[in-house]
Length: 257
Length: 76
Image 1 (cartoon, each protein chain N blue to C red):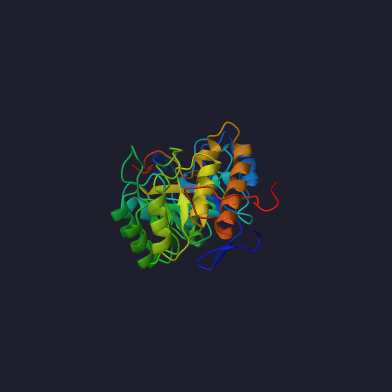
Image 2: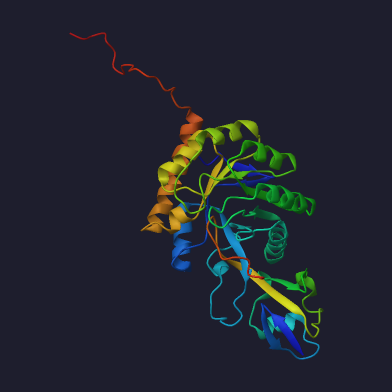
């Protein structure tokens, strides 16, 4: 697996499992789970510093930016204006032009507002950002995002935090055939088989948070996800057998009594 | 003079720079972004930029968050 690298906008990534950093019990658990996942890209949110309680530790005390690619997101942004502002702040606080762009359309589903997403992506790309857009499992929108200059597309498997797994494998397949940039399945994964399925379909990577952080044992689940992503990737590259309705014997008939 | 920092009003000495404010708040400047009246400052100007009466300052950093639900915009 070591020579099977993911490359986005000239950057090379070792791991095809990317993880979020939210919802953990504490920073120690966050660090241990991320280590167990083998991920080298971690997403972070952009928020106000707590100025009244400075005893609070910083996430980056636990995640060495030299070891991980810190990917700021615009989670919680419902307008183009907010998303662009958070992306700019994330770039100013961090070290790179990478941003996971989210423009959320609705509080209940947290589905992306794809019209707003395209608009915000255009603005940020013009400012030199490397925009990784969180989008619907919509092949047309995926193509539009690539056409305006996104070097990867991140379609959802299911609503954020829902754990429903890949709700529309056929759309995902069409996206994979339609656009020629890396596809990172983002959000909605519930367990290891969901991640394996995404990779077997041909996704280039999977991004998840809740499936790991919300598991009874997040560290063990992080390890499970690592194996799932690797297994799914290998199975995709190996090429599965076609599905058939009837049996084909595995053992030869010759030599039978 | 009165300034607003992350939505809270506080007193600051005239001539306080952004770097002074961060120092006073015990915040390491390398891991934050600072916005003054909606303008994002380059880290290089923290020591030169003096704050004015009524300035609205936002000090922003990274927190745990990923493919999950977070609270609504903190700036509202």
